[in-house]
Image 1 (tube, rainbow, N blue to C red):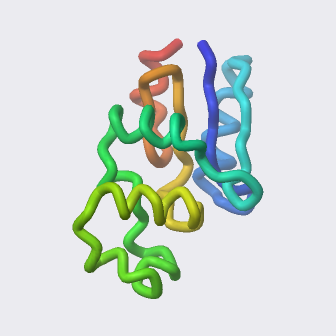
Image 2: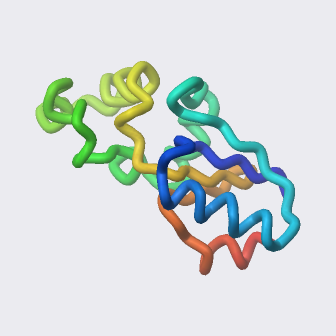
Image 3: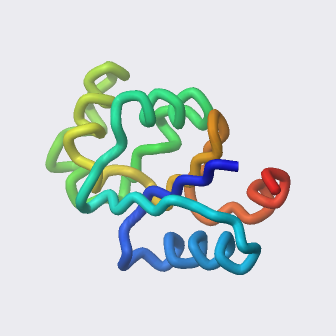
Length: 112
């Protein structure tokens, strides 16, 4: 199992996700989205698993500023996401081709 947790250190749900895997002694890699965003390949993998719309945080402060509500082109939305990691709903937890957004212990339990 290759678990990756994408989030930010100050996020409560990201901390809960890390704690979930620590308590079960499951190794994971934490990627701080405030320092590194998702790569194109990682974004494609997560998007294929959960869908692009589920990745975008409509409550993010940059959502309106970047006019994300008016952009209908998925390609352009992906490009903006790659350049603005603050737009992601977090945490993004990835296990190979499977992924979740938010705190989802019921789904992660099936990964063990």
